Image (tube, rainbow, N blue to C red; front, side, top):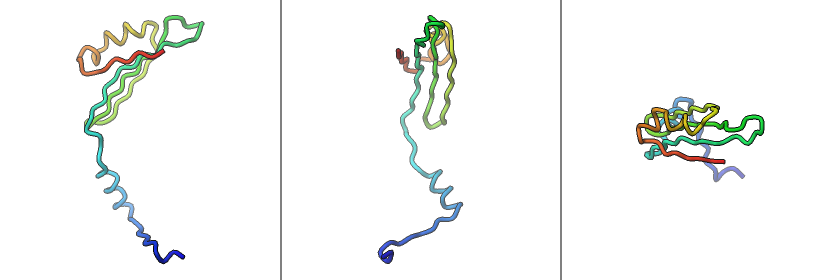
Length: 89
């Protein structure tokens, strides 16, 4: 029944080498996302998420702000011009 399946057991070191040699995305993703909260007790508040993913690694930062648009437009990442601004409801 299992004669046609060739099973090869990999060592822990072989698995680790395979994991670190997997191809990674060459495309850098840099976004600043603003999402306004819909809670009636927090009018004007929203979440700001700053995401960077690429060859230099993964970075994620999120914060809850009273004036999220003002916060996003004044942050260093936005001023650098490398980040895409995304506004969600």
